[in-house]
Image (cartoon, rainbow, N blue to C red; front, top):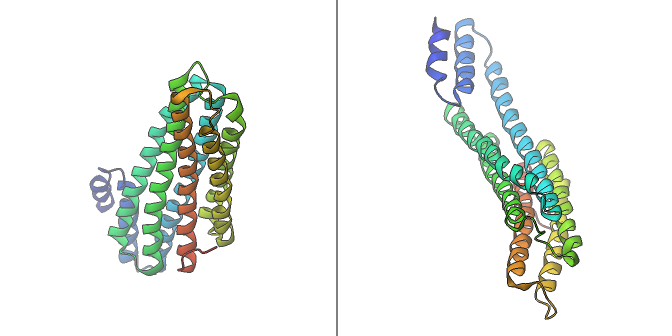
Length: 253
């Protein structure tokens, strides 16, 4: 009877199943005199679930930027529309993750490294959601200029390289989140230098006196360069947070 009542009360919210599991564990431990280590195990499972959601989000934004780049370079309207639509899924996962983390903090009242891990996860979720937004913006440029390509032939190689670099950085970031590998976290920051170099090359072409594609195209490409550069910056931010989470120190190269 008590289990049914708990389920009815907690099942009213999107985080209800997590609350129900925790309350059920507390009731079972109290009634049967089980060790509190069981509760710690349940808490660790919740932390692991948060980490896995972040890894899943990183995979989604990696796929989004890869497909958005392809849609941009090939003027593929259907693919651009699919990326624009998929951003809602990324947003929803991030919002649900925030709610779950706040619920865990409220129930478990974590301290020290556990609290730091949860607060860091909140911020990393926000970074990943913003990366999804930036992929969405790239796809919107592709849709805006359809059926033409937004990228002139002489800049295809630079934009393609920016897309490849963005994918590589995010894939590495997903591994950093999953494994908390501090050496790889530092590598992500160094890899961001490649994106910065590509961004500078793009701008250098746009400000050449010989530019012949007009102001509208120049604006599109300026925005695209900024989207890719900021995408990589958010990946660096995530890696820095992981480095601080593990070491308690800020990364320095």
